Length: 331
Ligand code: AMP
Ligand code: TRP
Image 1 (cartoon, protein in one colour):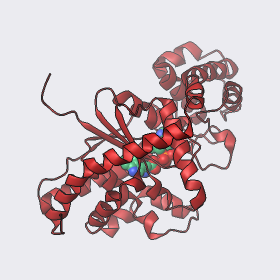
Image 2: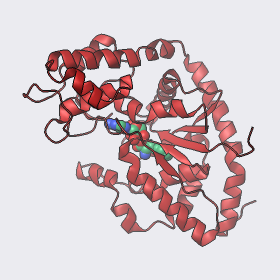
Image 3: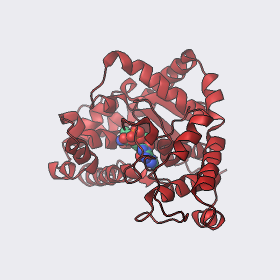
């Protein structure tokens, strides 16, 4: 046994329901995979969820639902710390400290913020400062690796930058974290518009596959996925975004390379190819629903309660150290 402490992993998800295949293949599958060899911490980020329109009385059921799906996907509370952000207000405290060191120009460049406001969402300060709170989440635990999908890459870059700024100004405190982003399926696209990413908030339910969808729904969604009229199966994101998306989904679900799949399906026609993609997705998601049904809300609450307590204990000395470093009272 070596004495080197295990590297720490941190990641988060908003409690907004509708966990879909993109979340799973882009991020949550890695959450599960990494928990065997790393010190893993997973957070349901309800403070982030407040930056969008939300109904207070629905937040608790959304937290429970999200945690239950994560547990069904295989997040194991006996080896991973699973809790909700609002149980540990140190997140908000560190976000304030980091906010005082974040240039407006950096926040103005954040594409997620620009996309949201560009889509007509009225911005509040919380939405603008969203990436600072995310940086605080990661740095609070001194995480080394952050498993996320491609859309979070820019936020991770900003977090790295803040860690370095802090260390330079106040002394070596935070490890500079790295994103852990899969090679394929880091950006799963919508089934109805393969030029935009699969998203929880798309009003068209046919655009996504949810974790608890029944096999016949999954097959229907994939059969009706938007493709093009040229019948050749090949990977070409520009010319054939729909087929390329399905190839990447199938590759992620089967572990086979895209090239290998293209070779097998190139001339077989879209119908047969889509059936094969659907079979692969159905098989990959099959264990989730029975596991979900076996978990009670009471179990989930107990897991989160204990996770929150452990998280608070874990971060207390870190927060004291940070406050002292920046000249606040850390006792
Ligand atoms: P969110 O649903 O935005 O809270 O995202 C939860 C996790 O899923 C984050 O790590 C995202 O990067 C990832 N994610 C969200 N949408 C996709 C997508 N379409 N493809 C791949 N990863 C995604
Ligand atoms: N911003 C992430 C998303 O939209 C969620 C998130 C919040 C997160 N805090 C985090 C992800 C810390 C990784 C690490 O998906």
